[in-house]
Image (tube, rainbow, N blue to C red; front, side, top):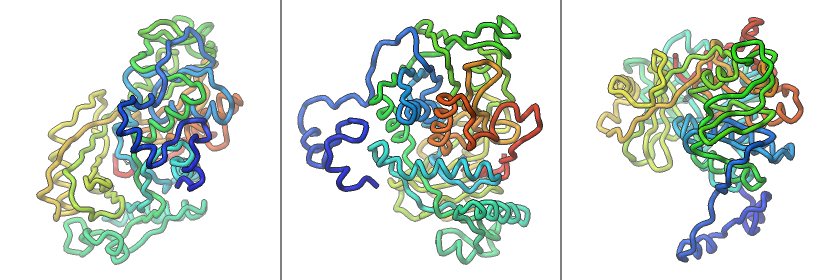
Length: 440
Ligand code: PYC
């Protein structure tokens, strides 16, 4: 939480105006326009770094480049608006109870950054550390929960397997009796997990990066990545050097181009002649009408292919597994709604009369081992922060921090050393499928 002394200051550490409660009221009642959250400036024809993708990953990379490394001649370009991709389409869950030691350390750093974000970025990101329960309905998932708990504990992550009676104390509305259609045998309980306001995270990073001079260019679509001297088609691919990007608003020169997209990661990388082992699947989610708060924790059921949390407004937010086929559609389907309703009824029969208000989909770039692809590529100056599958939003802060370090130092930071593209050729996979919220 922001300290009282900080709240009383007029400006935060980035030199941005802070409003006191009275200041906010005064401003709201005046007919002066609110200041823009980030500037709209003309697109230049060259930058030190061009970041493709104005979601949490791209904006966090820009922010940490500026704040940690003093690199500010940076443009973040997005073909739509900031946060219009995966950052605005996820179910806002954050956690670090992963399966591999590499994954645990990485997501734990992200959770730490999420914890201090309200203060660091001077924005109310509504982080709610409410605990995260992954239910086990059969022996094999209980075994995986024990495995994750042990890996977590070795890295001091608060995770343990609890029994049905303890689950009932945390979420009284769950049926933990043996009469349930899918009896609950236990759960992986992770108290530091929770939810956060995803739009605020995007706006917070954008505003803080802007204060350092980083430029955000919306409606700026990358049509091609310019590469010279490569061994592949059109002089692209391995051995080449990136020289910039071609956009719908003209050419931009840059010695460093970073692919921070989700959903289009393989198509963007292909523009540089870099093949990525990614297949793209929609993941659908839905939200109900608001009701009185009754669900105090995030509840996940892999066997029932769903996870649910209740927002501060009282809505239930549900997500599912990725659709079982490759697709670039972000429309919801009736098939999903029917499947979700069926599974939710098995888990929480008591909410059978609640109405769904909205449904949507986001695109997940799935890699063979469910871990991301980060760092350098065979094209000099072309870097990737992609392949997030269903884990992208929770990884945003640490990815930005690590990618910024990778760009500034030209070295792979230890925290992402396991996630390089070369691991697929070497067979050094980081199997993180067992930490997915639901079976895919
Ligand atoms: O891994 O916690 C998770 C998750 C939630 C939604 C998509 N993935």
